[in-house]
Amino acid sequence: MSLGINIFKKNVRNRVIQLCRQQHSDIKFPLQRGFNWLRYTIKMRYVENKVDSYFLNDVAYRVICQHPSLKCFYEHSLKKVEDLEEAKRWKSIHIGSDKYPRFFPFEDNPNDDLYVGKSDYLSMPRTTSVKICLKDDEIQKVAATIKCANESGFNVVGFDCEWPPYFDSKYISLIQIALDNQCFLVDASYGNKKLIGELLDELFSAKNLIKLGKSPIDDVNKLLDAYPDVKALREPKNVLCLSKLIITFNNPSGYNCSGNIDSVLPHWKMFFNKFNHKNVSSISTLCNSDLTSDFGKIVKGNEFSKEKSTEKQQLIKEFKYVMENAGLSRLSKLVLGKELDKSEQISIWDRRPLRTSQIRYAALDAEVSRMIYFKLEEWCKQLNIDIKEITIKSISVKDKKKSKN
Image (cartoon, rainbow, N blue to C red; front, side, top):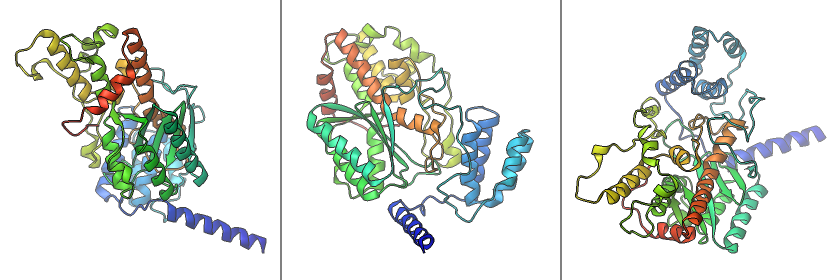
């Protein structure tokens, strides 16, 4: 009898999870797109060496679960690149009837560490704790933490969200919120959608919390598509783009000066010029996605307006242009000295459990906004400038055009 009750409870629990989670019906992708995506990821792994086998296996499993006929192609491709160990592993993997499996049959990299990434890239601060929030009480605690922080006065929140790379949809996989040395990764794939909506309402209605990110309004619009009933997402309070904050820091007074950035980073122009030769990867062409690379277009001398102005004014204009077009990774390199490791950017964000590398990427994508803010605060103290005043001024200036990723 007890066994039957336990099975019943398990079935009920699984059914509740299915009802609470967002539906996957809108993220089916056709066979050709799956084939292109899989082929390109194989190239990223074995030719370009941009991702590891953990990343590749996730993509392969997601694609093959929807299109089992591609399993033979993948096994053949592994043999072609002489990865016989992976080919043998895949030959023994059974593909079931679930086209959208929650759990993946692959173990995480045992040598990976949340706080230790690749040496050339920015690392997650050990002083920041990372918490994955799936259960109802965990999501409610995040909302309570946000409410408490807002009641305490002015504070800075880093936020970001992730979604499947299949193509543009209304499906959010993960919502990252960094606040007071804590980074909450809210599981939007399998968490209670109603409670997550209440959390978002608490966050984006908070008048004392500055929500920082790179082109954050794009993420807000994405969240609004997924949570149309959250009123605060329609008119979010105090959402600020890092680019705008840095631009305001550079020229807070509007005086005819070369900008504050010259005082703290005198070689900023040379720094950005060295990236001009880098090409932009066109992942969107292969996956029919709107995803963009952090290696975006960087200013070239002849692209600026030729209107008459002083050299100092022109420098400020150039800096503004660069800041508006630089991605988050580039901003991190400029301000913090290291770029972000973007290798997990288009990984499978609805697989569970998330791999350590995914968790590190997601958490840092939110926390880096706060790290940049506090570095700007250090510079402001050196120059006797009020960072809070600059922040408020940045928010008061409305965008003249839609933000970019």
